[in-house]
Image 1 (tube, rainbow, N blue to C red):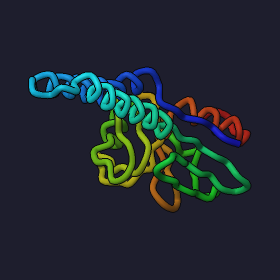
Image 2: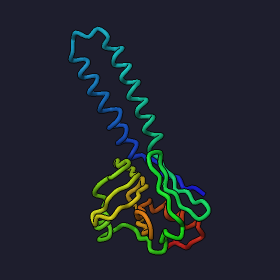
Image 3: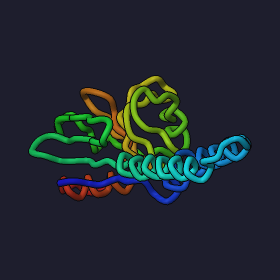
Image 4: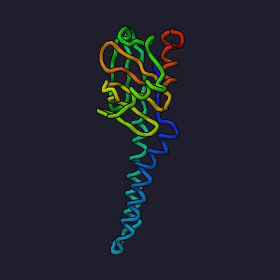
Length: 171
């Protein structure tokens, strides 16, 4: 069983700005400011092709999945993987990150992974200095405590799908 989490519209727009539009604009400006270059169109074309490939490659990297296999739960993305025994994941104690709890569990430091507006994946530290594994493409998130390893933060929608696949009622 697998639950997919991928980059949403907001994240795609930010990614396009950060990886494609801003570098491309700066490149065109710098190359056109240097009047001695005879190959302006060729150089710009090559760099635009590079930025396009970089953007498309980043789109493929910014996705993840939550996989349930036998008695294990995996949170995977192309750059990291967290594995938990299902018995260590306390789904019944999970809570939505709103109000005061959201302040305590606010992500303050990315220790490994990706942190873009609209997509988070990897290992982070929270405001209360606890380690968490995060896979989220929305602002509606659920905090899931664990008995071993870092706690988990995932999308509320992914949490609902996880509960449904495991046969639990909504908490």
